[in-house]
Length: 431
Ligand code: 4AD
Ligand code: MG
Image 1 (spheres, rainbow, N blue to C red):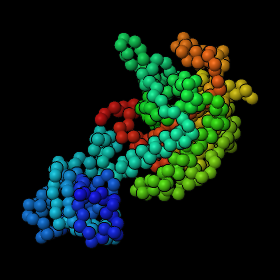
Image 2 (image 1 turned 180 degrees about the vertical axis):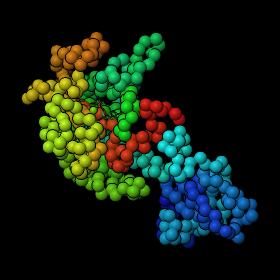
Image 3 (image 1 turned 90 degrees about the horizontal axis):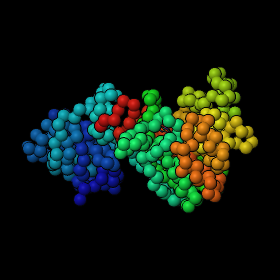
Image 4 (image 1 turned 60 degrees about the vertical axis):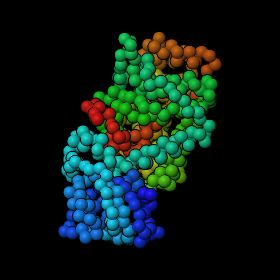
């Protein structure tokens, strides 16, 4: 029986003979000893092969093997401080089950080259850690929804109208008619609250982002709840709880992965345990002006403004009540100040910026038509959506969370492309 590497990196295995299998991750030959580091899904272990302890053919095979060769190895586990993961395997039997050609990835490859061979780069230890953290974040998100009584639903991805404005729509030929890839499931989710009260969907969303930035993808994973009878504060509370749970679960289950990425999990503790900050858009503008950022009331907050607002923070901040003019048509007008909406963005700390955007929805039929018109849309295109306000409309709210944005922040990564196996950006859809 093969053991997983992580399991045998343990004092209880000291002196025991174990069998493991995996890929050669690093290799160094030194005279009559070959040091190979083997990786599997769980970790890496150094294995030493001595010329006089294996047969001639095995020795020849191992000295000629390239990294990424797949091997099955039997040997004795020994504690060794000098080994990369603290233990070493003294090899008695080694079988090469699949040879590798010279592996194209070496030190100092260019970013573009690494993206071209992404299918091989994904074998990296860094990607191993990030993908495990992302998986646990999905699990945490679903658990929060289940605990709060949300029902998971499956909205369409091929859609007939824009949710977030026309400029980032991917158009496609749908049997001779125009259709689009979904930017957000929101409008469809709104239709489902009239039956299920609280729903959520986790889908890919598409944005034809024409700029190259550290935080935009053309295809990303979108978590969207929608809930009947929730007002803006309820929506913010749910988002806050979700982020707290994500941080708790990552600390609990992914500390080794964070350490592997060179991060200290402690920085997530504040978000896990404290309430997030809440400020109004008005306050945000004042804070920015006090920091000499040139911005006026009514301007949108871009990457740079969000960076300034969050770089010294240790936990997320919700910015509430943005001006109506800069937000989507579906956000409910703020009854206390009709120039603003009942909407909020959640900005991640330490400069990361927007990870969630949400609002209470405009539930008044006439106002919604007006907003569609003033934002350049055609009410005909939203006929079905407008129907929802005609048949027993109720107050409701929801938000959208960008999973890769959250992973980028939780893992403290510079670029969002490292949070998704195959990033889709303006000039890349291969591999
Ligand atoms: O703020 P956005 O555009 O809001 C909506 O789509 C709403 N309809 C959601 C809703 O209320 N149901 O997008 C929501 C989140 C953003 O906060 C961000 O985290 C992420 O989606 N996002 C992107 N992530 C990666 N790449 C992009 N190009 C993104 N655009 C938005
Ligand atoms: Mg937004």
